[in-house]
Length: 232
Length: 244
View 1: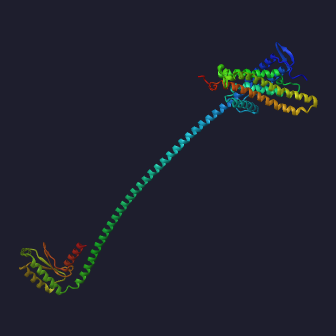
View 2: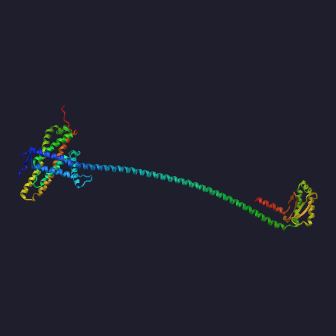
View 3: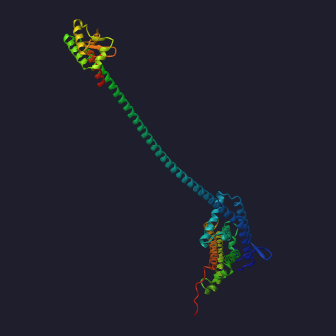
């Protein structure tokens, strides 16, 4: 068994190393896009079972966004929903024999964390302006600026480490058990891995939403820092 | 352990592309379908509310029209009832007037008929009485009665004015001395008494008329001196008829 911390490049496209995780990501992207295209081919006013499932998914994500941010979900739906779907499918892809989930590789989780970091900046600037976004670092007061800047980095780091640790450990444990105990023994662990994958996808998406929402909210004019004590 | 930054960037780009693709093939179409259904539902609800409002307005109009019809019906019934009462009162008054007129006419006719019947009965009774009296008096035509009538005749002649007596006597025409039965032997006595009463000798002629019943009368062309029970009965009949 290879070290989960190492990623082996199968081939190279320019400067980009194409690993198994990248290929799995492409497959997942293909499946999601083609599947979504097929599922949303004919959407009627009166939904069938397929459309009802899709609408349930969208409504659930919208509800989560609305409850987290308190605002309309439309601007965040694509990003948060795609994050959740991709991570969920990537986590559950470990159930297919021979497929190693992309989220069990550091590069994928780090890439997702980078996207969340960039989206926080993007949505923060778009929602509160550049000044508002910079002001969000001064919440609740100016003293917190260094800590908030550090926190914005560490929380991103913690996100991908959490996701990587949970998924990688699940894959690693199942691999060890399967190599030691035969065919049917890892099944309970695989079921647990499914639950872990669902929870991690949910946590990652909700945390991304919370970070974006906090930045947008702190940058609003109404969310001013407490009044500073003036010297006489 | 090595972290490949190019690998991180590639995966980030992959996910970013996936975000872009899914936003077009999944999130927007499904959200659009949900929004379209919500819009349609809202439109249907708005239409239903508008229809409900129209129905409420129509119901209000119908209710108002029904109330108006009820009021008109009540007014029409009241008017018809008042008109019927007026007509009934007028008809009753007219009928009462007609009945009273008929009653008055009937009463008047009955009174007239009663009066006429009473008069007819009185006349009939008088006639019957006089007929009975005439028959009874006819049985009393005796010498003494005749003498009494002669006395009454002489008294009546004496009550005439001298001019009247002279005019009767001076006439060339004769004077009829009418009696109910033939005077017979009493003619001379009667003639002498009459001549004495006139104070001259008139041209007398004795005539018998049984209709006199009893009595002596003088008839000339222009003068009649009534002195008989026939005349008395005729006078009584006239008096009774006048009294009736």
